[in-house]
Length: 249
Image (cartoon, rainbow, N blue to C red; front, side, top):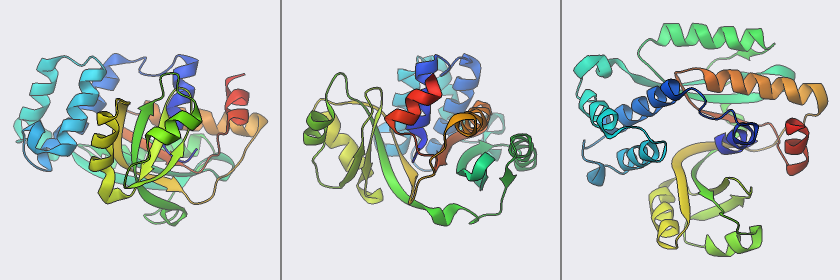
């Protein structure tokens, strides 16, 4: 698994994705707050905020919640204390993980994530401990809506696209970091359904696990994803169609 979306494909197929509506809205609110603080509070003038708001709407987050999150970005309700943090470490069986989180209490979040790593026979490391194993890329998650890999590959051929990781549920289009916004707009213009767009990480090499080791690695990633402060997870776990089927068996 080179990014966040393929792991979510597992959760979607298991019927576990977004099961806790309140936790989902909390994560979306934090994403909106951070995006609004990074630039203009107007979505049309702040591309990151525009993406965050669209994602919230697609998740059926009430408009009032969206407005409240944007307002809090000015510091109302303690939102000024929310900060973005990145954690790195190893999960079970050598799975390398990079976690993007948003929190108003870095000591609490670090302690809780350290507990999850330890509980699953992993180790929360220092900054840079596994980051060197990943490369930064823009990621545009696309719903193929019945398109074959060949058809989708032809439709995403625009300037700035680096690669495609195809999946019938959610496919990831990888871009040059600086080309993320342009690629997303170009793909939308071509009629493709965009579920998310963000600056992400992709493992340079992948780790293949099977059987109990694979199940334990996925259980670890699920535990991390369930944490309210965790926004995205990037891992070197290799999830091909074969291992994906094994994980879902």
